[in-house]
Length: 479
Image 1 (spheres, rainbow, N blue to C red):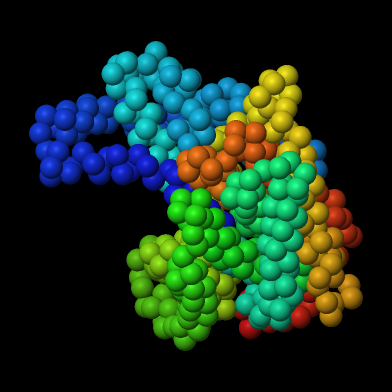
Image 2: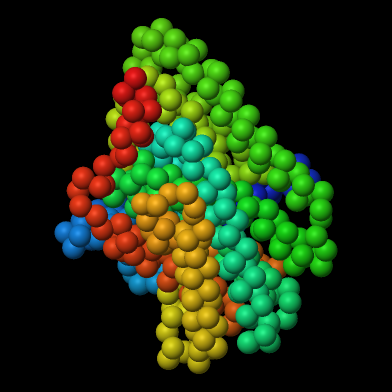
């Protein structure tokens, strides 16, 4: 799940404010002129940021691959190295960075002649553009994962996935909230907010690891993906509840009902309508004669569903995943997957590096007195975060050979979702500094231990890593 837009959209609103009719005058004209004057530096900054991202992603991924670790872990580590935690090459306002501590801005000043007055504008716009590319990257990732998934298999494990998702939300929330209240004497609203942060699951990280291990079409992989998608929906609802509680002290029941109904209608409706439109999609593709006749219509479909999901207050990645799931049933599936992979190779690394670059691991330093209380609470949250998800795998029934531990481990990473919970909590002022730091530490630890743990629990002989016979039989390629 990716709520990054809730935070990263701030510079966009600032930019829109320049064109407020009430404010048209010297201020808006100066702002517009400043942006125009800095346009070459803004573009240069974006290019330099992409160079840093791709270097960090490639080097980190290659090192981990040679150590027999998931490459996505290397991308996350690469992001830490170039981000706010180490080199300060890639920093973002929502990650605690600014133009004064961005080495990339200093580099532009030294090599491209960027003026001191233009640094702030260039930094803000560059950060927003890279964040948007990161958002598009995770949309493409979930579209690719949808293409790799099997709708019939997802429906077959739908009941198990639902139970896993519900248990994975309720268990850590209850234990986390009650534990903070009873053991650490945290007041109720902050404890509820921290408990809500424990419910998150980063579908992007888990899905990437499953794809790298060739486990997406196994029962375990389909249960994890199905549960993570449902977890996404539940996470949106939980976030709406706790944010409302933090701001007003009350919960808006109508908002919760709306989110539940819109989620069900969107997911079911998109799949049913998509399956009906599949033959027409194939006819359209066959009729086109221009370059990209398959890829472009597929991306349009994915972006339309992502847009619809966004405007009804769901998440864009739900729409992208649903689009991939629908198109996976067409006879064009294999060809489409081969064309989407290069796009994913370009955009997806941006997502993982940026998520990690925004994370400040300085909160892990026990030498700083202010961090110590947070680290103690973080230890408790980490235990609850791990056990609260691992236990979900053991709720799966009716499948004797399924790897239940792997299912639970696949639900562990909190990733960007947990960071957004912490960010919103800080913005509302409801979280004490120690608890805020504890949530960030929990997110960091669960995000980085999940990929190697998944590889360990999925250790099987090569033939067991292949898709199950029934999955192959029902796949579009076999038809």
